[in-house]
Length: 238
Ligand SMILES: [Ca+2]
Ligand SMILES: [Ca+2]
Image: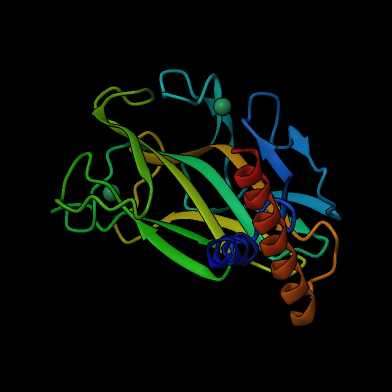
């Protein structure tokens, strides 16, 4: 009986499928535009602030198909959502391309080169060392490709990194903002960045009601009783 109780309690505390749902807010592969899929999770508006970015070729970049949203300026690109319905967490996925002659944080001539990434109250600074410098820091991302020329300026290598974040979030608005900066920023065909495979989803309680502690206790007891009955039936049958 104790084993069943422990199992039931852990399922409830971990937020099993009956108590939490996940739905798409906004996703795009940038093949047909910045907004390819909206909802079903309710939102009041999706806003792209380009800051110098545009849909450009992703040919040669693994996992990015034919187009990405690329920025070779120092402007800030942001993907914004307003009017989100009640939720407790967000899941954010995107791939980043670090393109051409990035000089890391300590390259001799033209550093630091820093990608500033902000969302959900967190600020990140990532960099790579395609041309000069020794620092290669893409944070919690998974490197898909590096040290190989994938496109644009053929004189330099490129890096593709895949990211996924799951984080607490209850505000009705969300913004992912990305900016290439630092004193060594050179831009253009020298160094740039791109984003692809953007997906934002909400984790929420589908019932809209968080059980009171007394209800939790009843649920746990119920699970335990059901487990005990099943075990007795198995014993009787055996
Ligand atoms: Ca794409
Ligand atoms: Ca530079």
